[in-house]
Length: 196
Image (cartoon, rainbow, N blue to C red; front, side, top):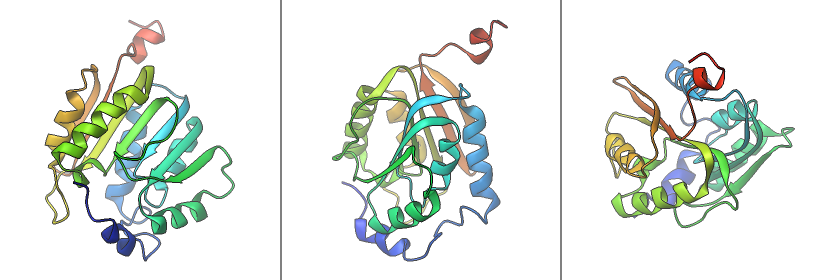
């Protein structure tokens, strides 16, 4: 089961339902996620659940190409306005895990999406994520920890499913508000730079 699509369409009747530009929580979360990425640049990124495109815009500065997906047409309309002029960003309307972008990615970001999936849909998504990740690629998950009515899966449970893919954990950050983790087979930043 996947959360009701009408909820997301109604939510995006306004340009910024989450306060991604106004709230410190949202700005801080983006900065933490970007700071945790183990590479300065990525060739091809997929952001699943892009909403209005705030994180997409930040990822675009670090990636050669970005595919950003969302199930809500209203969300994508706001993202298109925000991201106009970024020719290396492609927006697609897709509902996960049933619809999926083509190809493989060296960075996949699942932010504020997994808790809208029940256990079965989340397991299907995790299985497909592994297949969509390039060898040596990085999978990132970041989720709000507080309960809310539309949540189908707790953030910790969702991250345990991603952990079950079998990729080594590259980083983990947790505070009362958010859970941010990354997985992949890449050597550490210090190892790649000859420091360790």
